[in-house]
Image (cartoon, rainbow, N blue to C red; front, top):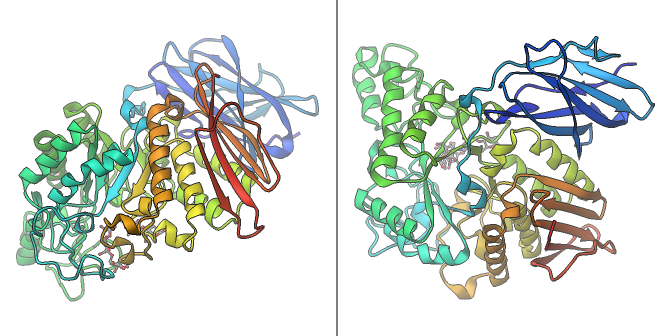
Length: 562
Ligand code: ARE
């Protein structure tokens, strides 16, 4: 009999701390596995020393998934799985495949748990509620520092300048505090010619349109007093055309000591032909950086350290993180953690991020795959409750669990259309989508203005001026965000990455967050006539109307003792 199974290094075996390994085993659904156990021993023992029952984690549609955490006192482990099948057979699985007895199986080996391979995410991350700001468009503090090109509420063009600045953000921190936000991410603020500042000219200067170094310090200090942390955007994949080292290469070609900081094809820079690598395709204003070059890496490590040391920022979001030489990350992580042990490091990666979430690069990434999933369920209705649960199990198991404390669960950003526009103006669907980002593991991140129902197509339309006229707000949406943010901040159950799906069938999704010992948060979504009984008064309730069936989808959140 052939047993189809999957167990991969990285996502299915990884350290939770220096003496514990998390193990995941996937068995093809068609095998009808009834139970899975794992036999374990130190690598140098002649026989297995213990056996652990694995917990059922549901299915992703293809695989039935089983998991458990195993204590590894010597840091070295050999292990083999025992799979009990509905047919009555038992199969043993090790690194060379299946065997019919434990004696015959060749165990898997995890050679040694190194501290550098343990993904340590700051404790504070798991109870964070984040808010993303595009600085030119959020608020003007005092007089604009540059002449705006358009009125605040004009439709943005790729080159509009509206005049938002750091002082404006500082002045609006009480608004964010009231909303329940405790983490703010700013897209780039360093000196650059564009409105978005992703074409950096000087990494050590704040763009004059946004203010001064003192303004940044004041922003961080005021935010900290209000219990809000600040994350800045690090654009290290490419620089701007005016970046001094690139300008030196423009002048001197290969003779420049900075030539190896870039990818120049030819002896001299040809600006017309763009004979150097850039972000995306031939974007002359964004020459790609080579961080495998030690001097360039050293320079950008200095940039990263500078704002932590001088401004006490709480984290970095790394732009186009998956296109940067990976040798850069372990050093960056070690150096920043040495300065600020609880700094948060987030990669901008839209696709499979496992290699960057294995302990030596980032804590989490911008969670675009979760966004896609929530859009398919809550907005497009191309997935039902069962389909959503399966896809979520698949996504959740793609990464080591600790990363889920830091994933940025977003519904939109400065690179996408806004969520209300995506929902064709249906506020009820947006509320459902928001509730998912706040109650699934990760950091819910609200894109400025989404909480009050701003609209906008993709870049640049999604970057309109923030609406401060309360008369124009969708107050029910803002109220929902406030209540969800309070729920997230005040219930430790929503910080535990453990999520148990109790029911997932067309018309009903019911999941529970929290550890088995403590209070738990239940989230149930029922469509049509379906119901899930709940104890006590709901902590939050929301209904959205399905376009497909006309039925309401009712979401209820409540707490139980265990
Ligand atoms: C400007 C124009 C665009 C135009 C583009 C190219 O506004 O309309 O399409 O130029 O000519 C920044 C600015 C943008 C600017 C861009 C180039 O914010 O306004 O666009 O610079 O000048 C991929 C990358 C991902 C990247 C996105 C945009 O993987 O890293 O593309 N995101 C970051 C930032 C951006 C920033 C840059 C990178 C450059 O967040 O704001 O742009 O520093 C798919 C793929 C993704 C892809 C995504 C979006 O789903 O899977 O990999 O992301 O679409 O295209």
